[in-house]
Length: 71
Image 1 (cartoon, one colour):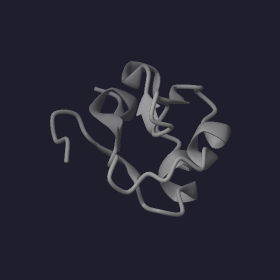
Image 2 (tube, rainbow, N blue to C red; image 1 turned 135 degrees about the vertical axis):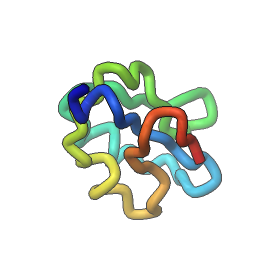
Image 3 (spheres, rainbow, N blue to C red; image 1 turned 120 degrees about the vertical axis):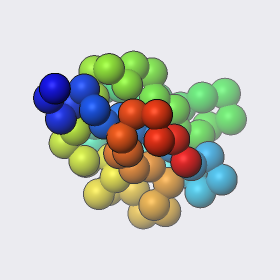
Image 4 (cartoon, rainbow, N blue to C red; image 1 turned 120 degrees about the horizontal axis):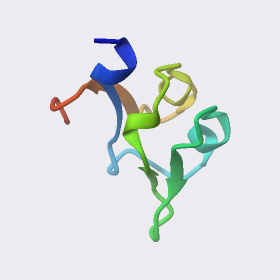
């Protein structure tokens, strides 16, 4: 099993301030704003596990976790 199939990005909506940095830096383009201008994951299966979203988020609102381990 490859690493990309074990991990998925999870957004903590309480921490997300809607800055869009994670969306801008995601090379797989799997992040977007929802109707409340919070980040959401559109297709976790396409995540390439580059960690750019997690590393760039100034509010620590997004992280890559093992599938099924949503926080």
